[in-house]
Image 1 (cartoon, helix red, strand yellow):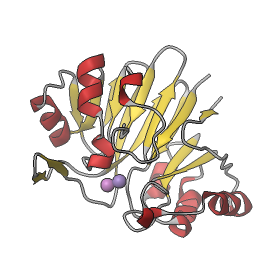
Image 2 (cartoon, helix red, strand yellow; image 1 turned 45 degrees about the vertical axis):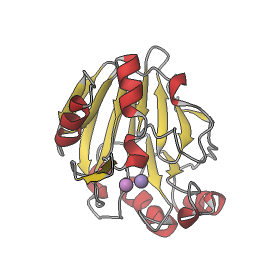
Image 3 (cartoon, rainbow, N blue to C red; image 1 turned 180 degrees about the vertical axis):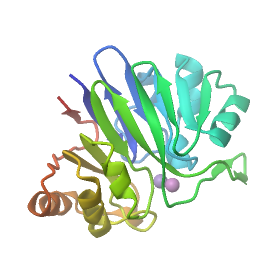
Length: 230
Ligand code: NI
Ligand code: MN
């Protein structure tokens, strides 16, 4: 059994029963998070881009737990400079293996920088991640606008697609609904909404539209809840 737990905003935990993987582990300072970073010791941490609401607690978790961190090249290089020993840099089009699975980098339409010690450091590219883990294929879109090449990502054969619906910084619900038609996943999981006032959205309305207009299921997933991917 492989499970996906929503940790709030764009932070997720995958668990295949023998190892765990975190995606964009933003917990400290996340207004909707119900767990703290020190509760997790993942084998791997995967990052979509450098924004602080995605790198989050990566350095603290990876240094304590010895996690492998996989991100685009420049982000991995910067994490290495912060003392993360197993920082692995890939790039768009490439697939990077980790214990229990792999991650393939796809483009995303967004920006990628990191605010650190009063400076804004421009590091890396924004990406979407196709993660193969526990026999499942899951697309984490990261922060992105809608783009028609999502059809190519759909060709990867997606059991699940994790899509931002917050609008303002990313796709909103109507563009995310169009993304579902490009991606054809079995399950849709909305994220990147209701964390801050500008990205407030009605996830129940999105769910109803997805299930009425596509063949995908959109199970409600509150912060802290776990979904069985089968
Ligand atoms: Ni972002
Ligand atoms: Mn974000």
